[in-house]
Image (cartoon, rainbow, N blue to C red):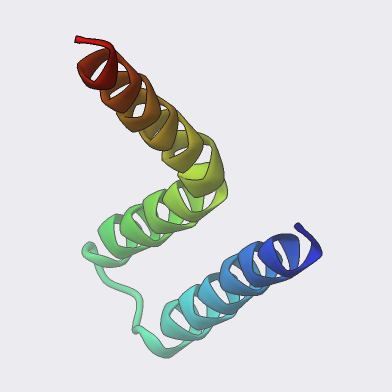
Length: 70
């Protein structure tokens, strides 16, 4: 569990740093706000990944249990 949390936090920090560097490198233009939005969505997906991943695995477990009972 500790390794999982470490990897999860490292992933969020790494994507945040890369997003910040991309934001600083890009010149001011009308496309910059869209790129910032995409980076924000990517960070959001990284934060929600363990929650969504757990639900998917739970559904697979339930489906396997139901098929094994039939």
